[in-house]
Length: 419
Image 1 (tube, rainbow, N blue to C red):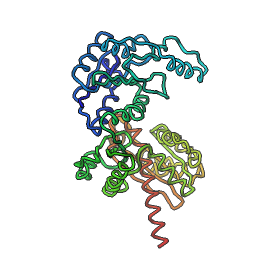
Image 2 (cartoon, rainbow, N blue to C red; image 1 turned 180 degrees about the vertical axis):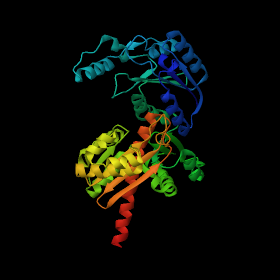
Image 3 (cartoon, helix red, strand yellow; image 1 turned 60 degrees about the vertical axis):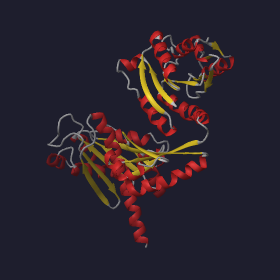
Image 4 (spheres, one colour; image 1 turned 90 degrees about the vertical axis):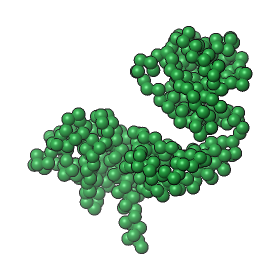
């Protein structure tokens, strides 16, 4: 099956947003055995959009369209598909009722312009969108397919996985696809690929790596006649990846670094507090994204200046001798935060954000410290991102990984002591 992706939106052509939808879909097609031949971007212009879709319809078996399904005048994907196929759009009463109910549940009347989102053409079936107002279209005629989905990435991904892929699998001859995503921190993408190279050469299941803000993702994909068989194919591949990468694998699927740390802390009934100098609460923000954080997190303190540190009880002479961004000061901050909050553990972070070096330390230099009932441990690392935003985000993940690995070592030490 030959496929083409068409991304709709003038904002794409102006460079205001990056086309992450096309990248995601391109990654999804290969495991399905679908060959992607073309990717196009087109603005919110009916004539040009119709031209692009007509060309795609003529040369591709499957055309995947994202964007242009909203309620405004410049959302024109439906109109363009109708024009290509020479069919008329009509309001479907059931879709209109569902759309009005969506607004009613939110205490708002439905704007009449949203009514276009309740339309179909004769060749189209609706693709439900329970998390948005724009249903998709599954259009099938003359042996060809057009799949139209919202441009909002969260809505598109859900529609693709829950609605489109099952239909495609049926059309492709049945079977199912199961995936497992492993998340890795502390090893670069090229090194991960080298370590798991023999596995990447497998054709079913397939393995692929992706560099993300929270580390390297290793996606394992298996295709089989039924879900149980596919999952059985995933299990040994996952086991081998974990064996090769060791404790660098910190989570799977929807797990986050903060969530994994929270699980480890809850298992021990330990509490955590955080201290940050230059990262402005980035570490605390990751932690408070976790719904269960009140059960194990005692709060965070941001101390961006020497005066702030002094108020916490950090010796000004220590700051003068080593600098605000240094391992000794970060270790002192961890101890001060632990005393101030009464938490079992206190994790402290200092990062050189740039763009200029600080005290000879280049941007991306991190200082980490963990205060525990048995003393304080510290660590300095180099090379975390290029921009201030990147460095802040990656520094927060690195700090949590530092804590995660300490907790794992503490487990092993306890087990050895028990023996």
